[in-house]
Length: 292
Length: 316
Image 1 (tube, helix red, strand yellow):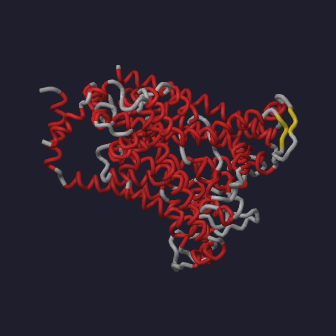
Image 2 (tube, chains in turn blue, purple):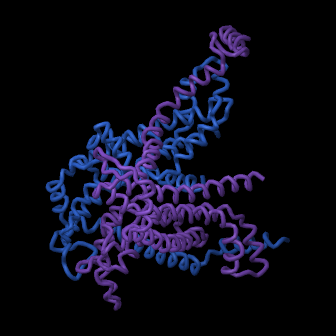
Image 3 (cartoon, helix red, strand yellow):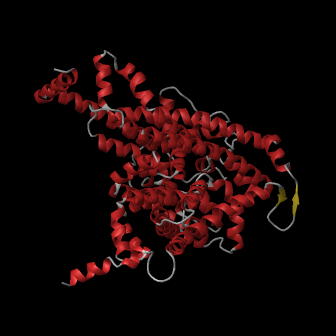
């Protein structure tokens, strides 16, 4: 009997016996880890609980975590003090707009790079991947001048168009398209289907998981971005939730924490919903992009 | 019958001779490719490549963005590398990286090891919970931590005082402000690195651990002799990812300290933002941008080369 077998055999016996002692050990370990995880998530808990605290409790000493009296006052204040419903709308239009555009344009380009055999295919791919290495922070100043030259400052065009395609998305989708069996589109090509039809009716329907993964990624990144809307939206009614909330932290030094947490909670809600819905795909896609 | 005729049509010889009509296949493919590629390539060309080239040009001029520009040669670069404010931004960014990269890696690797262990119950739930901070924006993370660390009403500050640690006004302290903004970045990003480490850990064959166990290696030895060496590639990737993130630090600093106190948390990107958009010194901002660009480029290139080497290793 090999060593490996004996080890698994011993584990098997252990599982079958499943004494109460072992179950207790697992429960204790589970509780300990749960406490640790909750401690790590303390900042999130603080956002949630503080959002519902009355001002007197937010600024009380000694501070508490859970509100004694729950109130919606902070939410009323934020919708009153900031054009907050406008900021929410802006965030959705900006992040949603970038996501839709990027999915369309990235998948088109990725299709050509993965499926059409034209001269210069590889050179173009290398050029596109090379732009991946340019951090947007480094091109922000001239980018601002270009966008300003187009007269787009404080419009959705400024927020969306420069990000309507990105090298990462193109590369990511190309890799996915390459993995789809070639027989699918070769058969269609033999039937005389145009490249557009192959893209629309064969490649896209088969690439839904990759498109969703990329879509979630792009949406979250843009929804959360601060520097981008800060630069291209100078008027407060064109700010996003993320950039609008920073207007509350003035140089005065007095920070309205309750109101900020209420705003932060609203900023978190759509992402949390997305996270819960596509959670497994989200986490595994992060691993995939991390190991690209 | 009808299917038969369709199949006949499918194999008309002219298809094999190079497609319908008189346009040759090569040209037809070209036209199709161009149609598919134009939108994305136009956007990348106008909004990524052009600004990059224009920043290079501007970095050699004195410019405010309004009208007149004067050629100053390497003047802006000389200023960037001699002016104490900018030097401070470089050393701060280096300090940020030195604090951020090891902290992020130790935290995420330890949690990945824990979450990879079979004795842990509800692993899926805990993994998701630990990943959650990654979808919280740096700005919101910064708000939460700012409240936790507030000298008067901060919960964490109060609890630490309870066990005899007085950290005072962290964000106003020249020594503690930097660790505080790094802490926020570690908190936000460790889940991302943890997931990458988990994928790396799952690639290590169980048989190796069993062989080590049979040879009498304890948990620590197994970690040092099996896990770490086999995690080498993943580790390099995470280190480079973290380094690039450190180079680009901005959001939480803008929210929490705005580069202060006394420039203690000024980084390359906060300097680009201030010089370019507040002082309107576009030449210097562009020179700074190029330093950032080249730094990122070197790191990304290293990552890319390692990645292709890895692919070769895997295919071999």
